[in-house]
Length: 570
Image (cartoon, rainbow, N blue to C red):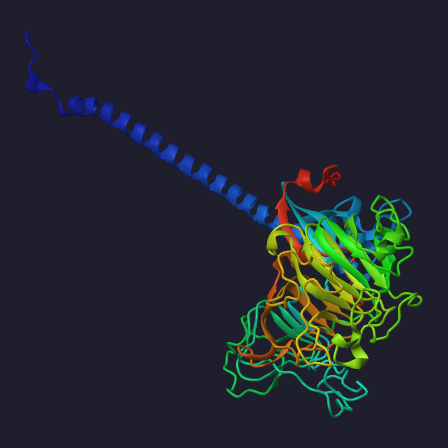
């Protein structure tokens, strides 16, 4: 009998639909569960990522804390880089756990370990430190170069903001080596110098004295002074402003400049370089001519009978095999890392006569119009020019005379590793001779102390126009100046690419900054490489601070090729 569909109860119909609904509910529940599990997993992974990211950043901060720790120790003990391995406790562990173990930053779970490489310290003063920070499972390593502050850290550095009194000042040259606010003050005749509106300083500037400013000069690098140490905040400077200073002062590239910084003390002499030259370079005596030619040099030093005391680890010959050759122009001598020219015991066969001239290098002493600044036949004077294709420091017990362009190979001064230091106890000066008898500019090319065919490409008796000098210049007792600055014709622009440090300020001409009446317009630019590379055996301020002069993050295996110490348990 056929089934009567109309007799089905609602319950039977709903029973069939409920089975379908159950499947849907289970499916939806599964999807929601999957979403919840995924969300929880994502949250946990995000937390782990966030924690790892925090540890990653914190590990770098710990590595930098290690660098700070080393620099602080080095500034307390300037020989720490040489003594640290001997600071041991009774168990032969280093008293500084960062050396052979791990040091923990107090109150944190951050640790650091560092290694020290002092192989360059004798030549450049730099120590390399590799510091690794660890937080959790994360480690990061930084490698830095640390060296003392040096005189070549500034494009322009002076001890006293006054014209060198040996050039313009009191008759006895005394009484000008006093600070602006010192009591008693500078004596009558001392000439204070001011930065004026036309001055543009392309690099960092520091003076131990007050910066005297007239108008609106432009300081394009960090500018500091040791004058008027503040109790807090901005450092005053001596304003001679024609136009009142703006607020903020737009004469300075860095807000708050000029800032106060501690005084940098000049050593009394460059004798330390003499010791380095005796051991690692060349020592000459009396007036000495040096022509740099890439990696070799021509030398003439008639009073040098023993130009080299010794040179461990090198076969360089300072006299081309025969000191007697130094009475002539000795060619193809390899350039050592350091040269020192000291005064001779006596003048030998030469005299200080001017009629006829009898200087060891054939110079006429009358080319310097100031009789008290004239050449002496036995003084340790350098007469240098040429192109350099290596690293070199030249020092003199008296003056360094730059007699023609003195530049890096191919004229490139901001690339590569060629670097030159010039350190004189007295003047570093641009030779610009003039004679008293006729008052005329004295032509220099192919005249003494040059050989007859030098400089190449010049004509006999040519004047030297637009001099160019590359290098770090330091005058310990006097200044960087142009010889006879107020008596020579305008001869263009004096370009110095490097740095200048001097006890007093030296003049280079007269007139305005754009229209010279005598001498030169200045174009001084800082060689930024001097922040990271140093002329060999250059001299530093007394008790100079150690500072970081180069930073890079490296792989741990690069910073610590022998591996890291075991990490403490727990």
